[in-house]
Image (cartoon, rainbow, N blue to C red):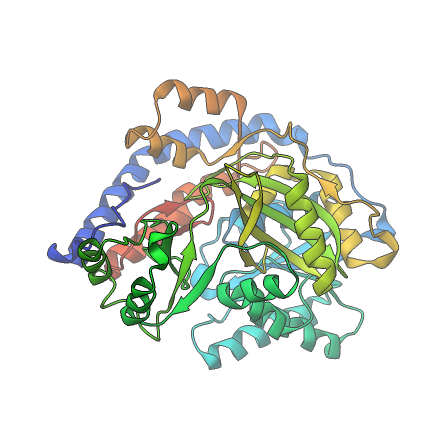
Length: 468
């Protein structure tokens, strides 16, 4: 359920309220609402199971092509989709995720063979424990493929796992980048933009700043009177990530603006002075092997990314193909773009070296398994990438949509239209239990943890299966 958005432009915050009590109270309220909804969702799930049992027959690959696959990062819906896509095709799928995500709804799927929890990635030692945990599972289950659907903080570690697995068993195929340094570059907003500049690929103007004084120096040079610039945080999930307020050129207004950043803009929390491009935002999602696209699609972006459609965009595809070939990428990768509403030119604004949640637009179709197989085995590489059709059904998460109505972010008519024409991301008539467990086990566990700890959170994001 989507909570009301705080105004990111204001310096005032909830700090004046007893912070932990507010977040605990909010968690308690959400838990109560989910408890009330539980009987209704349970009856619905049972009905889906009764009428969907006969739909479990799927077009499987021939026996010689079936593999034992380890998929990680399954707290997210995208991880569940990849796992079930492979399992429905006939592969034996093992799931693994960090211990903090032990409550994942994915391991309740009837298509999954086993679920393992590995140590959390909270420190340098934790990194080693996480890596060794995955490698031990790979050896114990004698896997053929390792497919990490990386979390924000596991992308580099997943690359290291690939390197070490190649020493354990060179026959194991891994759908992840070869070089941890490259993964780190792609995951770093500043370093990625610099790489794009080296390749003469179009990106907005940017400059890293480590203090408010750095911004003041730029103001003195008159930069902010020429165009719209804003401060973009480099840390993921920052409260300022959707704050595009123009940096004022007027001296008095600038002083008030920069005062909001005095305490949070520092060498440990740098920002970018970033050019604002007015226009539509898109995400490009790709599965790549040796720089060649095996699957590719583009979807419109929204601040919270809790529903998906598919669009065609040749300019973005050309940009992505150029970058992937230049860097000889292998793995999952997604890029964010802005299309200037005046010129129509596209600007890449950042990269994430991991799979994008927009993969749900493939609806677990068998041809997605074919694209993954092409990325894992040179004999099956596709000459042209698989693209999700523009006619793909709109994908949504039911409880996110219900919350939009409750918070007056959409009308009842729009809600009914979405349910009638769209597809729920997790609900599968042949496998309905993950749908129930996401909404009434995984998310309540997250809320209960927030209730106990009083940690700060803004939304319950059913797409990611976490509080954000």
